[in-house]
Image (cartoon, rainbow, N blue to C red; front, side, top):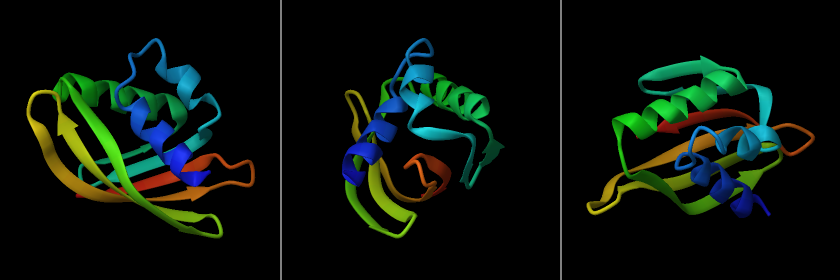
Length: 111
């Protein structure tokens, strides 16, 4: 189910460096792209490193998926970023594409 895939993606943003590669292995393609207002990266390794930097910049930060919409190989997820002890910090929307194997191939975040 696509909601499960988005929830697994959101969880990767809270995983330690040692667990993240396993979680990303089948979830995203090797050449995944990630773009948000401050970032544009390509590749699974760079994406994992970006998540690691998020954890350093926002200690205790995590994401919750609020809703998911999809058609064909395109999908939108509304989310909120929270911080332990502080609650919700912001809300946003992410657009993603999927390949034939069901892996995310691109993410574009808006916040």
